Structure formats: C-alpha cells, structure tokens
Image (cartoon, rainbow, N blue to C red):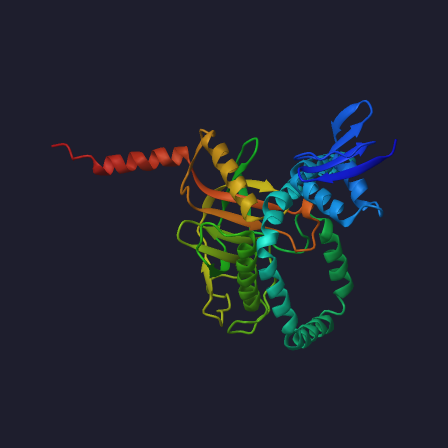
Length: 358
C-alpha cells in the first residue's frame, strides 16, 4: 500500500492507506503499527516533486524543530567517515548560536548587505588598485604566497604568520597554563557589553578588525606596511572590551610606528600566566561563553592554580575566514596565578601587616 501525507488541524501524518493528523513529530503508519518518521524519511518526502507546498512547509517546520538531533547525527557520521573531530562542535554552534537569530536579524543583515553593495562603486576601485599594487610589488613571491594561502584553507595554524612566544608551565588533561613574555600590540576599544547578540558581535568584530587593519596597512606616521601576525586577540572583562593585533617581534615601543587614528593605541603587554583551552569551529558568543564556563570549572579542580581575575578573559582566533570551520583554531584564556606564588604573596602581606615586636 502506498504511503501518503495527511494534513489536519493537529499536525501531519505519513500513512499507509489512511490519513492521520497528529501533534508534534511526523509519524509513519504501516499495516503492522505506528512509528515516528525519521528526518531522512521526511527529507525524502520534502524533496519529492509531487509533494504539495503546504505539506512541504509543515515538513520543513518539523525538521527545523529537530535540527539539534539532525546536527548530532550528521556530525557523528561525518566524524566517523572523515576523522574531522571538529565537525560536531561546528554544527552545534550553527544550530545553537547562529540559526536561532536568523529570523530576527534577517532585516538587519539585509540592510547591511544593501549598504555594502551601494558603497561598491566607491570601494571597489580602491580594492582593485590595492590588489594591483600588491601584485606588482610581490610579483616574484606571488606564486608562493598564493600556494601558501591555498594550503591555509586546511591549516589549524596558518603558515607564514608570526605568533607570540610562550612557555607551557603546566599541562592538565583538558587545558594548559602558558607563560607569555611581553610583546607589542596594536589595540582598539570595542563596545562594552555583557550580552552581545551573534549579529552584534560579528559587526563589532568587523569594525575593530578594520580599524586595526587600517593601521598595519599604512595608517601610521611612517606610512609603513606592517606584517600581519596571528592570533587576533579579544580581551574582555566587566567594563572594558578590546581587540588587538600582536605586532611582529622586531618592534619595540621605541621603534613601533605610531598610529594616525586616535582609535588605535600601541602598547607593550606584561609577562603573564594564562590558563588556555583550545576549541574548533566558529568563535560565536554562545560558544565563547560555553568554553569560558568549562575552563573555569577545570581551573576550579586544579589545585596548583588560582584565577587572577575571574571576570577577565581573552578570546584568540588564529585563522583567515576561508579556513575549513572544523579545522579552525580558537582559544579561550583566563589569567591565573600559580598557588605557590599566591601563598608567597600572602605571606609577604601578612609579614608587612604584622606589628613589630618590642
């Protein structure tokens, strides 16, 4: 007996021999009983050219409600077949962080796209000229640069970009503690906000990146083009949020070109310890919060370290936009102190506060 879909006021049914309306998930009815239809069966019916538009709408709505389960199942299959362990987190980020905002943010996104398109007559000629100038100045190295960037599509850490040095001082099961030396950064402030939407975070990041890119692409007193490095660093706490580019190690505060824009500041960081946890995929606001909570829980179970500032954290992003999402390298970092240092500082403070013996 041939299967068909029946619609009613209560929902949708996929049946053999009779129409049925149900609530919630699509169900399949066979002569030997009733069972819930799989999303694959729903997809097959959805794509059938004989399926009505009304039925497709109901099926699509039902599949959207199942999106977390579908993402989990697909991620497991892809990971099993390809060995890409980062696929599951990427799908979770899309389902949990990106898709829920699309209906509300669609008008804003459309407005931004239209604005960018309207500015193309002004921005495109300069972009083309910049590409032509770069190609002429780097004609000998261009084939190697193109090859390297093509390889970076599949690189967790991009080739050809300098990264700041650090020493691993503690390796735990799920994270590590690094000691970073001082280095020079170019920094710009970002809106201080506790709860960015995903769209707001993307826009704020793009604005910050463009401001810093203007500085390293010649927007400084020397007109000097400064090499790009990795990672891009977001530093956040309760009342302040910044984005920074790490500048090449050849620069000191005495030699670094001063920015033309008042929005950019160059400064030297201090030597500091950070607990660091790596994660793949997109550095969405939701994912950053989840990773931050996880790292804090790991630190809380580690007897050798203490959080120096529980409200501050750094989000590091290493890859160009075209790197495959499941191969992307992101890190969440929290400043920490080794407990031996904490105990020594407390002992010094106690000694300083103790009254002198007569």
